[in-house]
Image (cartoon, rainbow, N blue to C red; front, side, top):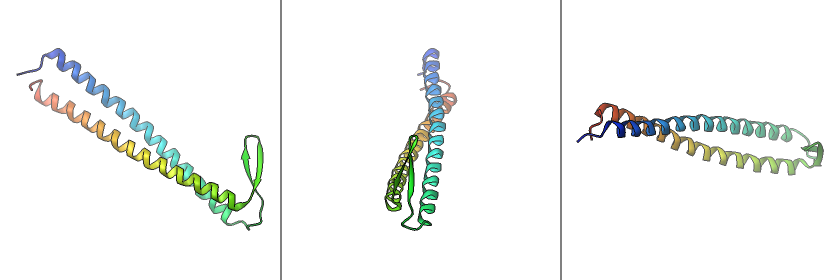
Length: 121
C-alpha cells in the first residue's frame, strides 16, 4: 500500500516546516542561555567586588535615574537571590533546548524515513 503523492508532499512540507521552526527556536534559546550566562558572570563579578570592600562601606544601587544607598550585606543578599533565579532560568532553558533539539532530530529522521521509503507505508 502506498501513500498518494499529494498526501506525501503535504506531510513532507509539514514535517519540514516543523523542523525549520524548531531550528529557529533552538537558535533563540541558545541566545537566551548565552545572555543568562553573561548575567550570571556579571553578578559573580559584582559580588566579588563587594566582598573586597570593608563592611562599613556605603554602596549604591542604580534605580532608574537615581541611586539608592544600602549596606553591603543587603546588596550581597540581593545579588545572591538574583544569581539563584538566573541559574534556575538557565536550567529551564537547557531543558527547553534539549526538547527542541529532540524535536528537530525526530523531524529530520521522519523526513529521511519518508524519502527512503519512497511513499510506501
